[in-house]
Amino acid sequence: MSDVAQLATRIRDTREPLRIVGGGTWLHGGGPWADAAPLPVHTLRGVVEYTPGDLVITVRAGTTVAELVAITGEHAQMLALTPYGAPESTIGAVIATAAPAPLAFGEFTVRDLVLGLQVITGGGEITRAGGRVVKNVAGFDLVRLHTGAFGTLGVITEVSLRLHARPVVDTIVAGTLDQTDRASLDALLPHLVANRAPLPMLLHRAAGGVPQLLARISGNPARATALQQQLRTLGARDVAELPPADITRTLHQVPADAIVFRARTHRSDAVPFVRAAVDAFPDGTLSYDPARGSLRVVLPSTASGSLERDLATMYRLAAATGATHPIAVVVDQGRTVAAPRHTPRSMLETGLKRAFDARDVLNRLAVVSHANLAHADV
Ligand SMILES: Cc1cc2nc3c(=O)[nH]c(=O)nc-3n(C[C@H](O)[C@H](O)[C@H](O)COP(=O)(O)OP(=O)(O)OC[C@H]3O[C@@H](n4cnc5c(N)ncnc54)[C@H](O)[C@@H]3O)c2cc1C
Image 1 (tube, rainbow, N blue to C red):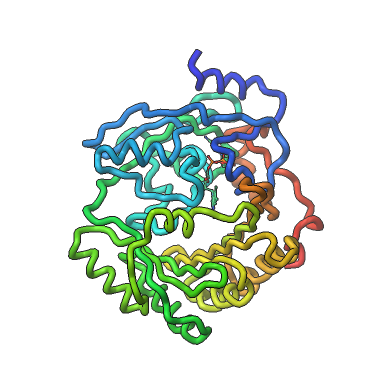
Image 2: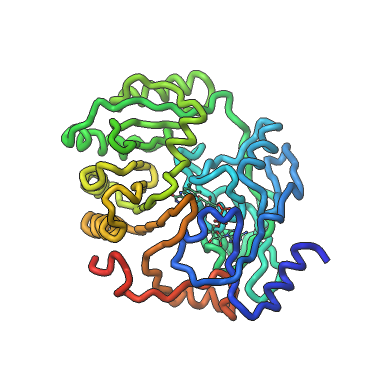
């Protein structure tokens, strides 16, 4: 029996709830989750099919992002994403969480790059959605449904991904903004929001540091020069390439104990939202992505000494400035241990869950009382 068939049998025969585990680094990202027996999938690794000429690769879901980079790099190709998190993140989890990627090439999101999936449902049925080619027949878009479902609708076991040719120039640069006061930030933000395409940018301020403007510069050398000039026009000084170690430290690592908070805002609300966050969290690291309107705050959990208070401040700030989709994740010793937010199920979600996992055995959500939430008063 193949290992996928064995996994399907385990799911079909289970009498207890199961928690799908890839690399296990972001288990509580979409929570709060109920306690459950682990269902490891990281052993499902390796390439199933790769035709570089078609710019499509099919891999098993436990393959890591680092492995994908190495395999596609041999053919001067790439997956146009560098999701938050460790290079050891599994691709199945990146798709299950629709992990956001700062400074993605071409501003692609996970949903743009997944062509097809093999998924085991909560009933233990092995199903396929989408295909292994860029063009596919129309129908219900189950690929996009499973992308970002946090494993609540099925276990992803195999994925087909759209790749891109690696451009001649593809680098991340950073320039310092001579704008530490509030008025200057107010002046810059509308320009950032308006200048979204074609330059993926990130306004970044490390704890206690000066704001920086980061950008992914890619294309041919002439285009790269023009894009760098665009950054200088926005006020970035001393624009220089970020070495790989600094990219990892700046964009992908979080302290071993921290709160990671993310919320989105409409462009017209960006200025008060970002400004309020800058004021509220002087000890936090802030990244604002103008293209997606999303702000990420990473706060060492020792910063104020009160996890509850920091969480409440974050949710209150989001509510006061009209920000949407607030998500907070508590990281403890490098592992995510909690996601204190209320996740009410809509009728649509409840119906989908019933269709794909009628017994509610896969990634069951915990019932959280309002009274127990740090942001209950928001
Ligand atoms: C330091 C750090 C910072 C991060 N910052 C952010 C951030 O700011 N925002 C953000 O959204 N993400 C963030 N992530 C998460 C990241 O983007 C990926 O989602 C994560 O790295 C996936 O890695 P993993 O294999 O360890 O996933 P795991 O922790 O194993 O799983 C993550 C989730 O996906 C489910 N899952 C795993 N595999 C499958 C599968 N095959 N099928 C179905 N469901 C599955 C799990 O049940 C779980 O709910 C961060 C991760 C780390 C380590």
